[in-house]
Image 1 (cartoon, one colour):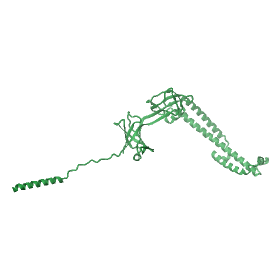
Image 2 (cartoon, one colour):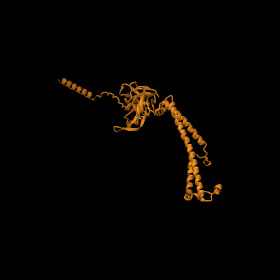
Image 3 (cartoon, helix red, strand yellow):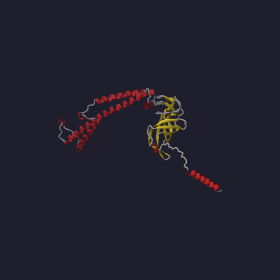
Length: 352
């Protein structure tokens, strides 16, 4: 019986030690992966063509021809529409008028130069420009007027020199001397003014000639370059021409309807390249951006396509959006997709 009791005690003690050992054992730790926060800046934006323009007429009139439709691709200088207006000009009539203006401008320069070359510049003006001569003679005139002021109410007859005084050039009377000096000062001043007018006429003529050349060259430009498009639109105002190659996205002209000047009637967009302009980048975000920074763009309408680009410009002016100060950032896309359309919304991710 004692043996059984001892065995039971030994068994109980063994179980207790096993339980204690199990309770104090340290389990092996399972590593937890580190979560790295995404520091990229996310913004919303809108898709636009790299350039576009709205064209208004420079002259009102009835629309006689519409030679294109919305969605059509046009070349630089291509005629889109024509107007009927007795005062407006086609390209051909504008070129003819510009040629006449150029000829007249050349003649005006020749005449102005001839008169200036034949002007007898007084020796007193040597080393001066016309403006300096006017300034100097005006100062002399003011001095002569001030000196003559005490004598200006004398009888005119008493101020005239005698024949002997005229011949000798010597004036005995102070009043007569002051009057003679005043007359001489006026004569020199008028001479300086005349010289400056002749010089100004030549400058004006050369300015007219430069503009006439510019207009004529713009109308004759065979490439229809953008820098000459404005002159063509202003001078050949009976026609509506594309200022650059692109797609017509809006055309508000119909044959037989009157169209007023100054009202936009045509929109042309260059869709060879695209940009995205942000709408919600705050002042806190924009300070971390830089020009040339890589960007990933996903259009809401094409969620499976990622488009790459770079920051092209960061706006210097601000606007307010729901109480926040925001700046417009322009992203130039380096990739495109046939499904892209002007105005699509986009998610913009600025990469570090």
